Image 1 (cartoon, rainbow, N blue to C red):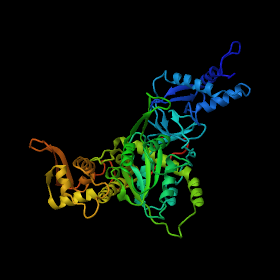
Image 2 (cartoon, helix red, strand yellow; image 1 turned 180 degrees about the vertical axis):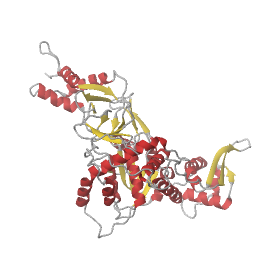
Image 3 (cartoon, rainbow, N blue to C red; image 1 turned 90 degrees about the vertical axis):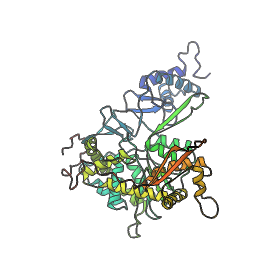
Image 4 (cartoon, helix red, strand yellow; image 1 turned 120 degrees about the vertical axis):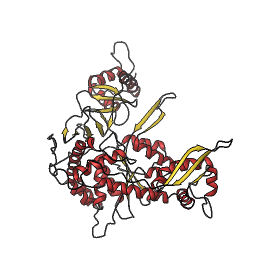
Length: 514
């Protein structure tokens, strides 16, 4: 007879005993996306999924065997127990469950170090320290790896990091700004894109960068084949890199844009016909590519493009040497980044930009980095973004033809169908991505409008024709290109407003003093 079947005189069923064991050691919560988790009462503040390889079910099966002299709970008993525990989790209001980075009740940033004991780093304006137990609830995934304890205090972590990367000083400073912003969870982050010919170390650089902010045994991923594959990858990692991207299909371009600003995917829940599960995420993304012109215009506006220099044969190192150097430097690099993040948080509330670029929150972080470091990363980022917009437009055959048309004719007003007939694509077959009808033409121009504005072409689709058809009209006109936003009013024009601050060490909470 199965141990899960209660019989007279034989005590509680195996399922009942499993539930009792679970309630003695865990409390049960539901996340804001409707997933049930178990949290150990006297352990790390880690949310365990009830099912799966890293979940409570496996741990409970082993605890049952240890408690009842090697007796093994059946699959049906475990399934019955999980159903009861899911009901317990559903009794309470949903709670935030974070992945790698979260915001504490006092506003501080909490970074899960990923260790078995649940240690974390807590960053507040002007200070940071490590803690044995996180003040916020984190979940883990099989795509996560632990981070080393940051330190030592006073190390030259940024210098050590730059020595591992083949990029010039302006590019490196923008990278540092991106790394600092990557731990600020409530803002959109541009897609860090490493560009360079073969032999520039794009893939290795991307892996090192991702493993600084969200270590993973698979920091580099292949291009996902569909939306479900992407959702699984994004749900399991705070930061991830798509390696060797050459062509991005429209669905993936749209998905990456949404993941920058926050995305949600609704799918049917497992083993049900009428219930759904919601995957919600904002992610920190990186890519490597050779041809930046292959990127779609709307995605190009959300990129931070950094070029890598060709590595000479006399400077090349083996993978083993690079890995050893990175692991040796990583604690000091983490400490330096946390130092800088604490100082950025101290000045960020007062940073104001004269005008707002597309990735305005990220631009404010760069302005704060410039203020505390005496750098000019914001100006470099804005200049690179403007060039990238032009490159993306040049890589789009329809966009290039549209820009040339306005250059020749100046202001033009008409229907999308009329415009489609006037735009030649040259000899031979229609280029890939060329719109086939007026509806697609109108939609394509709307998507290209931000890039067109950046090169001095205005698009207005708010007018209607005066005939009985009341057709929608497009007006294309030559305008002055969008100016780059001015530096923040609080940014220094010369040296830093105060001398560099000594890094704050592990375990210290000494506030930063300007």
